Length: 65
Image (cartoon, rainbow, N blue to C red; front, side, top):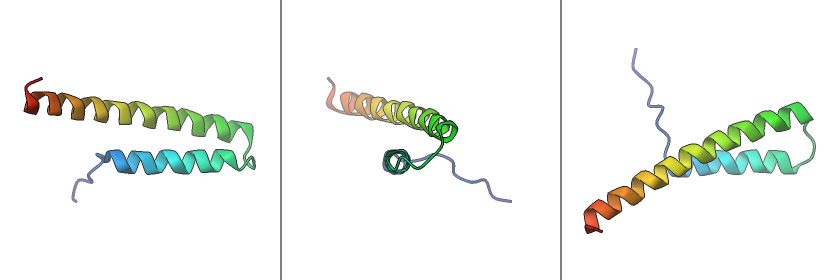
């Protein structure tokens, strides 16, 4: 059995976040589901921020700044 690659690209995270926002913007979901989506969205934002921070660090190392 092969191990699945669970690392998501920044673009994948952004797409997931866009989908969550679109669902929440419809106004057709229950409060509980909205809260669940909000929590998931905040988790995705945190993961995306970490990826951006890592990229910034790599760029600084490469440019010696």
